[in-house]
Length: 180
Image (cartoon, rainbow, N blue to C red; front, top):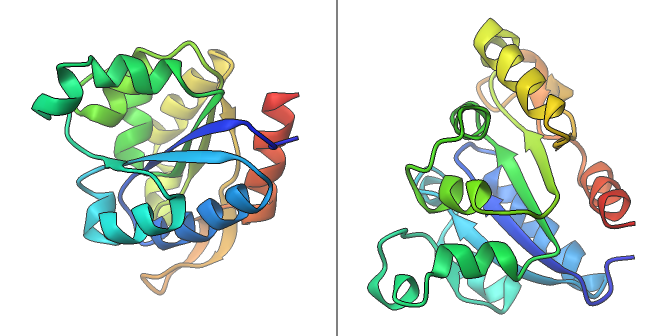
């Protein structure tokens, strides 16, 4: 199902960003091409070099890169994908999606995209349970955006609860289902 599909993977901030590296490997193993946008928050947890090495593609991170934007890179990135996935999706990124923000490359690409969007939230359980996050999730679901997870379990912060990134197998299945 993923053979020759073009996945635009947006990696936002959070300790779960390291799992995006394994997701890239799984996508490539199934024959997908993977381009990545690494947010400033995501880059606090993993490096552009790691992402580029696994994806085999340039990593995009700057809305105002003169080289990319002379070609309207944010529009091109959104148009050349078959699906856009945000893994992990931080509370901030979910709020940007729900609010229609275009304040960085990732949110601008999402706003400029007409492709299916899959969002995999990952955050502290209290952040997930916050009424603002719940409202943002309902908003994006009402727009037909697929939301995968989160899962329950022990968090990196030592707390337990709902907020862990969904299992990669579940995210892969959501991507396959979205592309059917």
